[in-house]
Image (cartoon, rainbow, N blue to C red; front, side):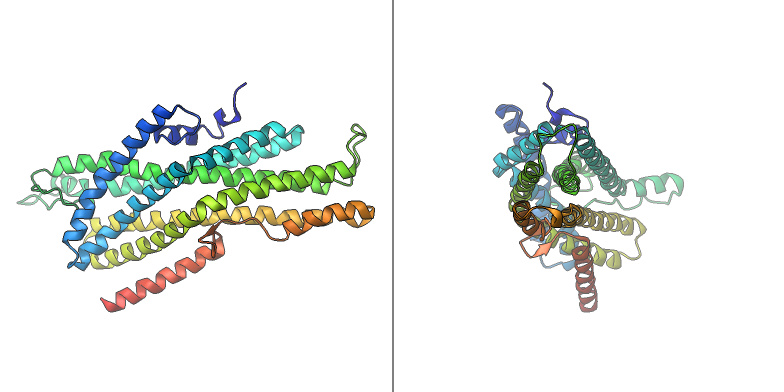
Length: 386
């Protein structure tokens, strides 16, 4: 029987994870090969940037210019090794998704989960296209002087633009095109690592949101007897809801335990990149191509932080509805025994499910606003010190 993980809802992310050697259901040999290839490509572009950074510690402008790319490399490493080290958790989460689909018997439940899975697929596709759009804008910047030499030629060629500061221990002008080709081959890989792991996180969040809505639907109907199913009593329906809630909470707790530390590092790096690219826009204020380059990086980073926060916010909103659904079940009309059965379910749903960064920064739109305000404060402080 074909697995639900092979369906169109998860196919793009599954393909990307397989190409990085992180899909837990393919052969170990294939996984090792693609993991090594991915790490080699990311490291091959990270090392020259690191060398240039160390050599230029006394030049604050070079340091500020190097920070955004360093943070992108670090994000790729963090996301990659988070799942590589804890691949059993990824397997368990994916198996939980497959199990939930198999356990759904009511057509309305299946349709509801399918709607959330399809929504997650569309959101992930939009997110991927947006980030790659910013990346494409970033990568086309070196072509501007060449095009200007064709359209508006000068007596001499315009200065070449490098995507970022690197040190290859060669004459960079002489080997400009080789360096540029290396960047074009590796930078998309770095961003792909970040994007597909973000999409995997989106799959987990949207699946949880779908299951929360299914639980909500069951709770609202727990007091309604089905004339076609006289064997399923209200007591049994409450037990089904309790089991479903337990599975949801265990799923979120496992996801939270994996993501909390990586998210803490990633939120901090996002704020650092937004601040540093903002500074570079001010520093390069007279160079249009440089403004475009750093502005595209800045907007892409803000969008990345917004997207991660929005995913966490959606989980909070959907899980909050479970608590109100208990009251809509007309629990006060139940016999005392059934009311006591509902109490644990009500208590567990009082606190919504959430994903945190380091256990203190909740991934939500409110936290996103606070992070942006703090980033602007850092930016203003650095600007005043310059």
